[in-house]
Length: 96
Image (cartoon, rainbow, N blue to C red; front, side, top):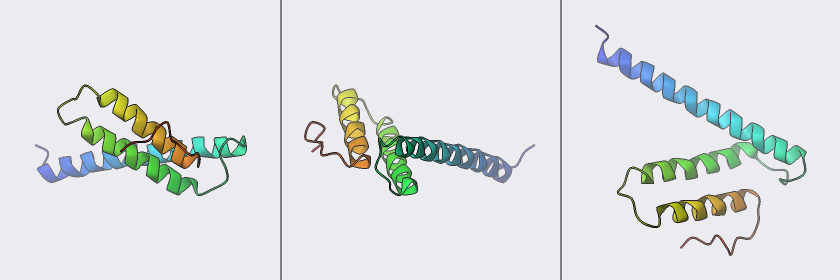
């Protein structure tokens, strides 16, 4: 029988692998956007951390009871985060 510790270590290793993969993918996408001149040069590691923090927060919010406004609120928050990364003023996506 597999011990609880071994299962925990395996689960933690699996989750960390997924997180690292997501970080690499987002940084790669940001680098492509930078190379294409769509995104101003900047710290893509920091941008990636910020975007993943927003997505993590939204995923935690998904565990709460749903509201009628959830999809609209999530869309606004994601838009606000993208605007922040692209350094775009965002009066349309203002989230209180």
